[in-house]
Length: 125
Image 1 (tube, rainbow, N blue to C red):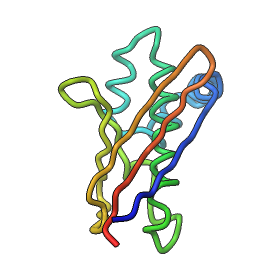
Image 2 (image 1 turned 90 degrees about the vertical axis):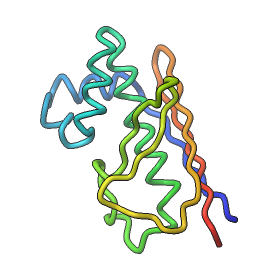
Image 3 (image 1 turned 45 degrees about the vertical axis):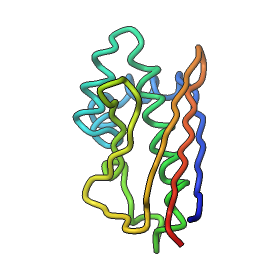
Image 4 (image 1 turned 180 degrees about the horizontal axis):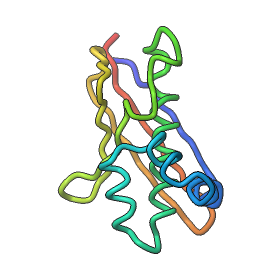
């Protein structure tokens, strides 16, 4: 087994400004409909969750990049971060397959100014 990891941090204000400036264009470029639905359900805290999902996707891209032939082989909508029945974030890959991935775990955190995500991937080989 081999372990790959990725971490990303983002200012929540940058995500808020992008959403306020570009609205649905930014949202639909970066997030899946289920991610948008989840973040919007958080009302006043939605920007924390949007930023957390953004950092998550960046961390996912960093972790799986050694498995790609080209960094452009994965897009924003290929990685979806949704919560399981216990409220824990989980990664789902959509329209892309990684045969060597045996397990993937993600942790997201945010505070007043920043959101951070760490992804750990176990691959065979």
